[in-house]
Image (cartoon, rainbow, N blue to C red; front, top):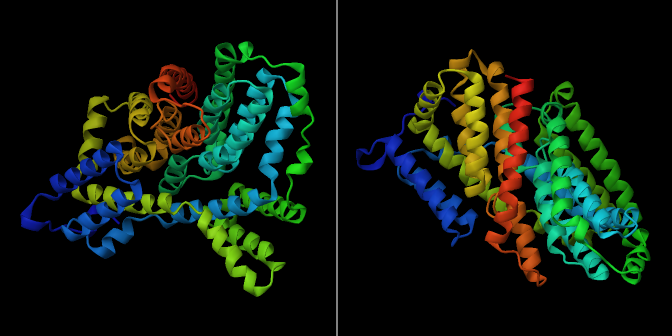
Amino acid sequence: MSEDAFTPHVLFGIDPMWASTALLIAVYGALIWDKLNRAIVALLGIGAAILSGMLTQDEATRGIDINTIGLLTGMMILVSISRRSGMFQYVAIWAAKQAKASPAGILLLLSVSTAILSALLDNVTTVLLVVPVTLVITRELEVPPYPFLFAEVLASNIGGTATLVGDPPNILIGSLANLTFNDFVIHLAPVIVVVMAVQAVITHVLWGRSLKSTPEHQARVMAMNAMDSIEDWTLLKQSIAVLSVVMLGFIFVRQLNQQPATIALAGAAVLMLLDNWRHHAEHQAENVHKTFTDVEWITIFFFAGLFVVVHAVEVGGLLQLLAQKLVAATGGKLSTTGYAILWSSAILSAIVDNIPFVATMIPLIKSMAGSFGGEQNIQPLWWCLSLGACLGGNGTLIGASANLTVAGLAERNGVPFRFWTYTAYAFPMMLVSVAISHVYVWLRYF
């Protein structure tokens, strides 16, 4: 709904722009402070926006993008059920054996596997699946796990940049800018292949060539049987079939005249049916409850709250004003605006979580459409935002959810994952990836 369709009436006659801006700053500050769970912060933001009069309850619900919520939920359910089959553990062990248990080879193949899985699933889910197996393999080889975990963090965010479903910022951009799975693959996958190759070379130079293991320890890894990781062959076949159909649905989403959320949720419902068909009625409730427990409800409610807060800012008029200022500052040139979005997104996404940053930037970029001749003409700006936000998330531990997820898993397993140690390596590598992206968008769009 446009800003003209709703007029906010803030308590005590406070200017809606200032009130909504203060709310946004407070939410960002609380997220950076990191003393409260982000879902709590987002829900408090909803309450403040409605109770203060910035939005009515009806207007707040209009700000929530159901397609994004549905797509996230559907993919989480699909992955929750699929991973019970053991398919993801199989991939990790297979990669280790393909590398002949060479530490440098495993480092490379696990990184590539993580990038590919992140493109097809999402980066947080991927690291949750890959990291535990990585720790087992490095323990058997008696090599330091940190280089492997570091490389997987970078690979998860890089691979996730290539598709609509790979990284939460892309889900936001795709849904709110009406971009399809194919659009992301066509426009972003080429540069992501280059970025991933360069990052793999850098990682090898930093760590890979110095990693050594003994023949005895390598023999332990080679003795692992990837087939043993498959826990349920029936579920494996069902999961592969349903995931394949869902991916095809994403590819042909426009021809089907459906939204990605519908496809993901329909696939999730079918896989839940197949998973529970074998169980008696009394066991189905327990099984379904287990599936729903795996859904990251914190993320879901965080997104919902964020949508409402950003909608309040949009209704208040701040984003329209910022869009005009940004266009004026860049001289009205699309290329300069694109570069500004790319680099500012990268730097800021390294400092703050890239999800709230992207949620704020999307309506801001939409507001620029009139200045550049329509929505079709600003499409390069979406790719600049995606590349900057997703790759920029690699810069620090707080830049993306996958980073903190790996750090948490590492610390619980006795592997130190310090903020400054990570940043010292990751930030320069992030700048390299953004520089490659800058050259790419210059050559292709500007």
